Length: 287
Image (cartoon, rainbow, N blue to C red):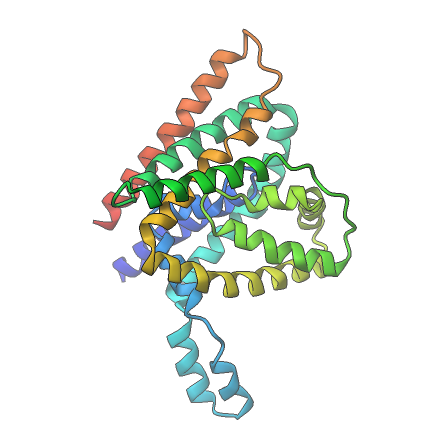
């Protein structure tokens, strides 16, 4: 029982950290999953879900329905992870908005430290620094650098647009280095969805979740295949993505002056060290 409780709390904490990251434009929940040692397990568990069990429900074979569902869905993993993510989004959506609005440079300096340390950890996952892997990293860097420099588009908030936003954003959220929150910002839906969460606009929230569910179930299969067969080049690409996204926090620190530069440096270093400590802590718990 103690091991089950410990495992539940361990995954819940990881989920809470992922949810916190996913509320931030520029930091990816996938990055946190990688840091805390559950990234490949997360992708694999999602890719296993193919909803075959639903066919047995329609046939009235309820025993088979529950048997296949338990085989496809890792409830011991997803329940605590989901609880952690939801708690974090509820707790931090207003806090992150306040910090970005009132302390933008300091907040993004902290994010820059998180991203840089995360890129370092992903780089350590690369088995051999070959030309192919190097090219993969460069492609990831260039893609992310251009991506974060795009201007937000003007879009309406129809349920179809919200569904599409959920679909695309969740694919970004599962990728270390690409922020789903920032993608929502580009799609013109970030502030609207934060407001929808704070005001509990159920139709918009449910539509977004449905889009996210479809997106993550389809994209996770591709990612699971790449991690199994092309891990080093995939990790190289992801490390490049992370370094490329540093353009975002840098662009948000435009009001740096002589009095704030020390605080910015301290927060960036703190963010970097926090990621390193988290990674070592969770590795220790796993071992």
